[in-house]
Amino acid sequence: MQDPLRHLWVRFARSVAMIILVLAAPSLAYALGPVASSGLCTVSATPLAFGKYDPLRHADAVTAGMLSYRCSGTPKRLIIALTAGESNSFRLRRMGRGRRAVLYNLYLDAARTQVWGDGTGGSQTLIVYSPSSGSQVNIPVYGRLFGDQNDSAGNYHDDVSVVVTY
Image (cartoon, rainbow, N blue to C red):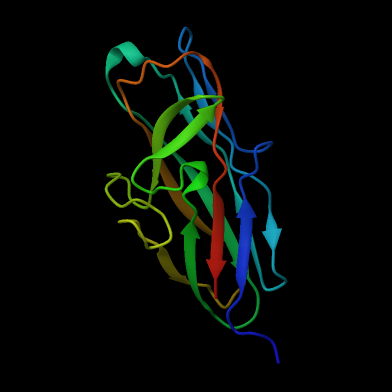
């Protein structure tokens, strides 16, 4: 008998989750990564790009990306969580470049008030039901790079994983 509680991990690995911060002609991109499958559900993610970031403007850079999932079989209750990444904190995620870092976070809502995490440290998970039709479901991921960060230009990254439990 198979374990009814399954975990499906999509790792935003360093090679596919590159954060690019250029302060002179600023743009910031967060490429979400590969497709992962457990046999019953498939999860994928599209890029999350912050666009222009000007530390002298004192404003947050905000953006949105997309997670997608498709499950076969009967409808399932899914708990979709994100890991804290290399900062080990949901309060403020950190994208690093050597000893340097910039602060950002990922959210469930467009107002960017509900931090998307694993349900600990003030974060929330997303609970959804898979459709019985096996159709693809798209879920927005909202990002915020906090303003007033005057770090050096360069490539910044974080390793965040998507965990789907059903």
